[in-house]
Length: 356
Image 1 (cartoon, rainbow, N blue to C red):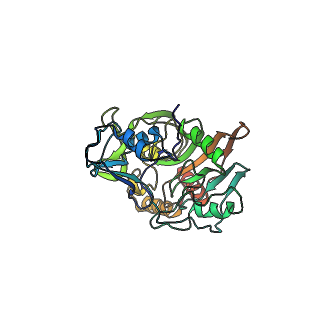
Image 2 (tube, helix red, strand yellow; image 1 turned 120 degrees about the vertical axis):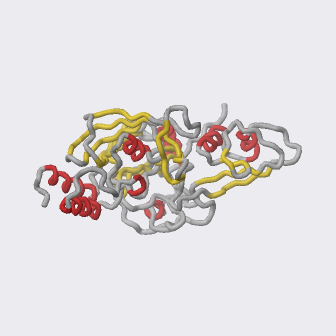
């Protein structure tokens, strides 16, 4: 039986994905020899690289991270002599080291196998261009530095998923390889239980609903993702988001989101797709006044809200998983960070007519 390799996941999908610097970085390069037979690229790379499964190579091809002569190819592409193959990942291959730093982190739970953190908004998860220090991994390296089984040479330590810099909330980290493999499989198989809270523009019509739409990179802007009709874009992936209205504020709505799939920016892209962009989501247009009136008073109110929470109003509220050692199902909740809490309180007062 072929060995199964579990990929690292971010908050809404499998890596590799765009890193903190908005670029991909070449980690491996191969030039196909003259006279080489025409074989599938996934088979070719398995023969070239040690400790990597064909499944993992196929995942990388699906994520457009395998290039031939500078262009993405699928896993069934047949290599030809003198083809130049590049494997691109979201982080520099060896241009940073994880330096332990005594940075405060909010530990919600910890035992010998896992550590659960309520990540603050604005904290980058792992180092990259422009963020070589001060990241969550730097903080974890300090927190775990005295453990005998701690491996600082692992560029991702025990990360099995990720949430964006400007998203706050719960993140689980494995403290040993067995836990990393076990948790990684849970995220890969989508058996973890995660709920997000988000403030979105507009009055969401239905009390609850489901958004279905393939998600892939926007052809007009590779920094963005977009929704495509099912089957239209071969590089887009099936995505399903379930939402439930928690509170209405007239021109904005507090919603709870549950991801059936995990794609990059899934909540942000799906909510925008149905006309309810996340409040203060600069990348997807949420810094603009998308609902409301044109009075100076209202404009000032929105401006004050953006000053309170100048990042996408998205918080990873809960996380449930099966403990890798005990097999016990654990479920954790988290408190909103101050910026999110104050933002909701301000919109609540506005809806009640109490906001001056």
